[in-house]
Amino acid sequence: MRKTLPVLRIGDRLDAPVYWRPAGSRGPVLLMAAGQRIDSEQQLRRLREAGYSVELPSEPEASAATVLVPEPVRPVEIGGLSFRRRLNEAQELRQSVFRAAATLIDRLSAGITPDMDALKRAGLQLARAVSADPHAMATLTHLQQCDDYTVGHSVDVSILMTALAHVLGCPDSDLPTVALAGLMHDVGKQRVPDEILGKPGPLTREELAVVRRHPELGERILAATTGAPEAVLAVVLQHHERVDGSGYPFGCGRREMHPFSLIAAVADTFDALTADRVYRRGLSPRQALIELYEEQQRFDDRVMAALIRLVGVYPVGTRVRLTTGETGVVIAPNPLDTTHPTVRLHRDPHGQLFEGALYTNPSDRGWQIAGEAPADAVGPAWE
Image (tube, rainbow, N blue to C red; front, side, top):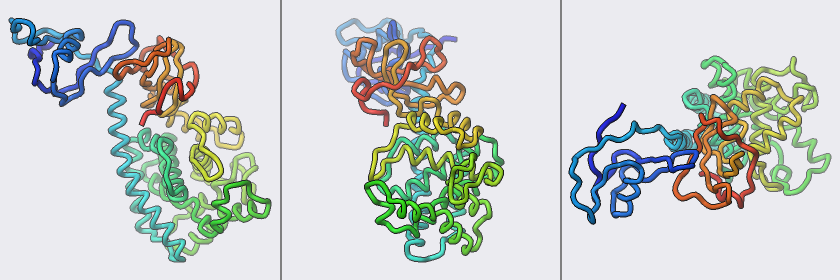
């Protein structure tokens, strides 16, 4: 179907973004954003090259008021920008949950019992947000770092656990409890000395033994807290257990672990691997996935598969090289095909920077991701 559009002139403002696909490109280019004012003849000439009718000051007035244009494409850029907007909305919710987690830590540090009613409200709020957009919420957990690792880690594990439970098909009625378990999984660390938790080097055998007591310490805290669900106590006690019996504190195997603990083991490990710590920089999400799979016998296989479906084989923020020779960064997941996320291209096969915003089309099977690209070949990761 075709439609008519008015002739564009200097001074006009666009009520929608304008795209076109340059010859030889693998995706559309954003020429002008919605709301942008046309200020120059050069802009008009570029719009004309894209197939739009324009009136140039240096030429006679256009004879027609309208022009037929091809049916507008729906470039993947719209999806990328839409995903970014969804991330911004998710970030607002994350901040709200972050405040609840910070209050929990402050109360525990002061020797005050956790406010379970407030935490349950935060868990319910998070569960609703994750159900509405699990991919955006999960992406937040590895796109940014938090100055307060203790609080940030609790929030991000809560988000990941809830999103994984959603992907696994857990009933919506269970998700608030899953979210609450994630928020509280590390409460026992408030009983571990700061000089051990914040030590910049390797722990001694004695110090490691102290740290490994935090699941039991956390379970004691919650056992004395009115209104703490049994499933949450199980996650607090078992989030470091492993399905092959190699975890702690009791060496439980799959049969002894609560289903939510199976989820917590994966979420906690993935977030810990991607986070910056005082003694090391965090891994990229892609490298964290690889490391998890190298030890996949320790984790539940269904939860591991759900993690891949959730964050993708190449998570958002991963710098990648395509089989076409182009390089770029993943800016949005593709839940229907985790190997073909939306990629913003930075450089062509010859290493030259692209002008404007150029994106691959995830439905185009003419390209594949060949692997990760070095930072200097791509530039800053997408933010």
